Each structure stands twice: as C-alpha cells, then as structure tokens.
Image 1 (cartoon, chains in turn blue, cyan):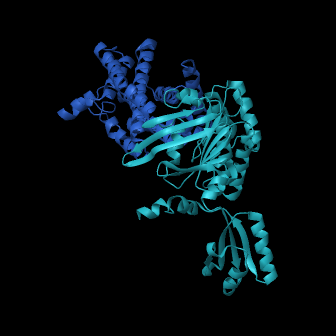
Image 2 (cartoon, rainbow over the protein chains, first blue to last red):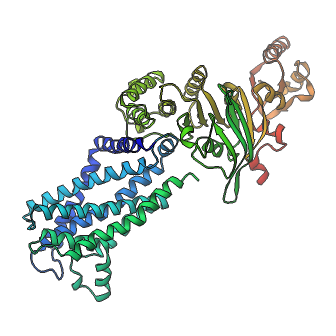
Image 3 (cartoon, chains in turn red, brown):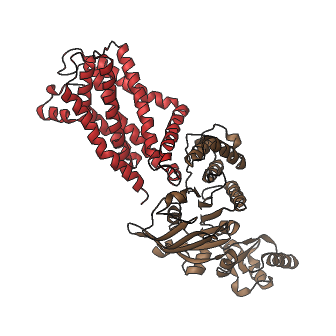
Length: 253
Length: 323
C-alpha cells in the first residue's frame, strides 16, 4: 500500500494548488505581507541597533528567516481549518496512504514558502541589496532557510493537532511576533541586555539568520554557524515530525 | 459471512465519564437497509464512527464487509462509504473537483476518477453546478454532493459494499429530505448494504428493512418495521374537530376502541392507535360525514420517537429522566 503514498500525497498537494487557483488573493496577501515588513523595518522604523555596515545587508537575511518562522502560523491555521471541517473524516475513512494528508500540506506550504522567498529576494535586489557570496553560497542560504521553514512547518502541524481550535491559532498568531522578534533578525544581540542577548542567541531562528548572513556576505561562511543552522532545524524535526505523525494516526483512538 | 455485511459484538466505547456504547450488538444482512433509531446521545454517531474505522472501540468485535475494522481498517475502507452528520466536502472546490479528488484518493486512477465524477454528478442532478464552489451550494445540493462523494466507492467503479448514513436528513427542509430519501432508495437496488441512523421513526419506516432501537449505548429492540410497530402500538389516527363541544359525541360515534382513545380538548383532538390504516381512515371519515360532525383534519401518522420510547423503556426520553 506504500505504493500509494506518493500518488496520494501528490493528490493532496494538488488540492492545495487548486485552492490557490480558486483564491489567488489569499496567496498574494501572504506574499506581500513579508515585503511590507521588509519596507517597514528597512525604511520606516529604520535603525538596526548594534549593526555595523549597511542595514539592508543585515536586515535581508533576518527578514527571510522571519518570513520562514511566520510560516508556522500559516501551516497551523490551514491544518486547524481542515481538522474542524467534516472533510477530514472523509479522508480518514478512505483507503488512502496514512501520511498523505500531512505530506500534501507540507509540500504545498514548502512550495508557497519557496515562492515567498523568491519574491522577497527579488524585492531586496530591487532595493539595492547585493549578495556577495556567489551562486553556491546563495543556494546554500536558500536551502538553510527552507530547512528552517520545514522545521517550523512540522511544529505548526503538531500544534494544530494538539490544540485543534481556531482560538489557539489566534494565540499562536500573536505569540509568533515576540518569539520572531526575540532573535537577531532585526538587531544585533550585542545591543541588548545580557540575558536578552543570550535568549536571542539561542533562538533557532537566529542561527538560521546568522548562517544565511554569512553565506550572503563577502566574508564567507563560518563552519560553526552553518552547522548550527543545520543542526537546530534537524533537532526540531526529530522531535516534532514523529510527534505530529503519531498524533495524526492516533486521532481515531 | 456471505449473507452478513456487518457484525457487531459486545462493543464498548467510553469518553471520559460517558459510556457511549455499552455492550452493543448488531447484525446487518447483506443488501438490506438497517435503521438505527434513537435519541440524541444514544450512541448512534459513535457506532457509525466505529463502523467506518474513524474510531477504535475499547472492547468488542466489529466486522464490516468481512473485515475487522481495527486490524484490517484499510480493507474495510476500500469497501465502505460514509455520509456523516456534517458535510464532508472541500468547501473551496467545486462539485466535480471534490468528486475527482475523492476518486483519486480511492485509487480509481485519474481517468476513471473523472468518469466516475461525471456519472455521479449526473445521477444526483448536480451537473449544472459547474465550477461553483461548494460553499455557495444550497443545503440540499450540498447533501446530494456529500452523498455522491460517499458513493465514490469501489475500485471497479460501482457503489460501495456498505454505506453508512449518519442522520442524513437532519437539518434539511422537506424537499431536501425527499431528495435524499429517493437517492437512498435508488441505491438499494444495486446491492449496497445501508446503515442509517435517524431520530425519526418516519424516516426509518420509509427506508429501512429492519430497525434497531438504541438507548444509552445498547440495542433495546430489534426487528422488522412491522414487528417494531407492533411493539410500539402501531400507527395512530388523529381527528381534529372544528367544534371542541362535539368531542364527546364524536368519541361515542367513531368506530375506534374507546379505551385507547386519548382526547385533547385544547387542540380539539381525538387520537387512537389503529391496526389497518386505510380501513380505519375510511371508517372514521364515513362516520363523521354520516353524523354531520365537521372535522378540520383527519390524519394517519406513525408513533413519534417519544411514543416508541415510552413503549419500549417506560421513560419517554432520557433527558426527562435526568432532569
């Protein structure tokens, strides 16, 4: 029956693509929102405390990582909406592959995130941001960002399966802001009080932002930074992927 | 096995403090429509969710279409269709998109899924809905599409072996109800076994060959529609007079067993159980005409669920007992 795992997952991915085709407006809003944040922090709020050099060079990797982190609530919302509709019962009562509902969701979300990254990078380039690291480093940076998104995605799925209520999504939607800002995305941790700086350094999102900053920068990557940006999302996935899958298959017990 | 589609033995399911199913037994013969009748909270939906592999029983044995619902869930899922209480459809997508999606997930293959979708749209008179998203459908249309989706069924493109309908007409207007009823009737000819839960005796009577009455997670009565009607006092005739003052006179002249007649002066109503529906109806109408007593309404009706429960359990509704 595993032969159907791929086709069923693809069918579920196509369902999401069909939703986009039905409601392109929602997709566009999702893509424009990070661009708006970029413009806001780059020009309106301005600054970047403790940042040396061009702020856009510092801000762009931070905004890309922040966009990936905010993907968590999008995933959680979509899964919660599905769970609260009768259609999930129909899926579960059909002979489809076990994980297809979740795999389809993650494939569609990853696709959307990749498009989101492309849009944000294009806007950055238009604003005069110039990655210095060469094509290999550029791709590696995008890879790290998507890996981080993938970890956020499974956290989002797990939270949706555990909480399962629209009110909880709202709570998470509010919480992602302080958690997202409690990172080095917008400002250097050295500019913060000691304890806050430490918390910020530990935020997995900071690791991804730091590594991508290295890869986009002229100075080249620091191996420890890269490993941290690989290890943290993998550690999160090692926890939340099995938890989410177990939760989903157990839902009927 | 050959002539039994469903076997349920001693099934229990507990949610927290609530014993939803408390040793329920059920046998459904292949190709029949089996009604599961009971009030809210009797355990009907829990039963359907267990039969359709959505929920595991705490204990007991459940076989559907020859396979165990826990150990061989996928084999069961290949052979069943489910119409839940709430529409199980993708609201964003159109009718055809929904049916194709479910067809693919039933592994019909892309082309076959398309053909099956067309066939079902045609059969349930939904072809005209085109690309309209389901959320813009009327209640009756949505229910028909839901029913169509539950029939996506077998890989060979026929209806499923066993179909579960959980209160299929709750919340529908009379027209929607009639539509669903006629759709269910059209299924029976194809050899599908149907399990139908309902709160309405009328519905079970219209559609089911056999009925199980469920109360507090157990079957408290089981039989053909006729057997059950005999148990519950059968049909009733209601006579509403124009003039309440003539109730006494009517009681004396009507060809009904006076001991069984209930009189309700507020509603100007005489009500009595009948055995032969048509004979009783014509006898009553004739007697009223001959005596010149004007009637506002004369109607035959099934006993209500409350009346059935009164007969079977001595309490007319579980809620009243807990009050």
